Image (cartoon, rainbow, N blue to C red):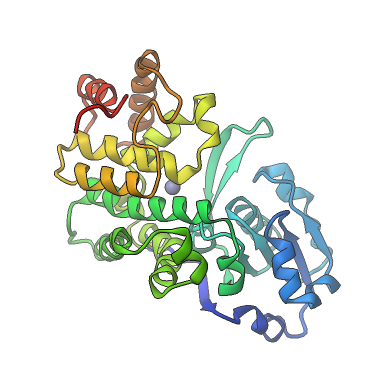
Length: 338
Ligand SMILES: [Zn+2]
């Protein structure tokens, strides 16, 4: 099935200035995050007038239930990926449309009709797919250019992964139109390898940065929206999930762990792209060894077992060879060879 959630996507130097016109005479409730919200309010002081809930930080059922819209006609979500996931749950449960103002360029939550839901103890619970109406995603260059660079950098890695994971699942093209559209968009995501990924380029908001932000926030989300099971996550995200079971990796961003997972995935398929990926990840200062992620050789058996479990759940086209997976992890323990 093809699923999209967004009616309008407005990425501009003054995109925030059109929020009032979009809201019109409707009653608004705002869900606001801790870090990015003050920047948005400084640019648009009229936001202060709306009733608001401050986001507690995790997308849980309890958090979604806590947001009391009190009869509002539209919900405005201002924050990062977990806040946006929570806002989508709230909008669906209350039958109101959503307007999203991302404060980080790190994920495609604003463009996908699903939420990743966690339990109260912080562990992963499930993801819900639903029919949410996102009237507009408002990407204001002034907000994004002043957001943390590391989140953007990790978001670009996670977006490049769309290409490799789609290819892993479906190859270079498909006779199913939606899957083929997803693959085509994922090829665009692959081009982010060519942009200048530095803090200087990000702060100056170069043309390449603008192109990358659009892919991180929108096009990357549309890959799964078109391709569904044919272009969803594959081994790289399974490795991410397995790594996340280790305390030492908690300090690393999602995209950094996915980037390492890409090295594992492409090594498994004996792809000539491994070398290119590794040098790109090194260049953008992302971890490329287990050592850098704080894991030792002793952790490898548990890591292998966890990836095997994850990929069985994912129902990949072919089961993985656990012996070969173990050798790959051993080779990625420390980068001594080239
Ligand atoms: Zn991801």
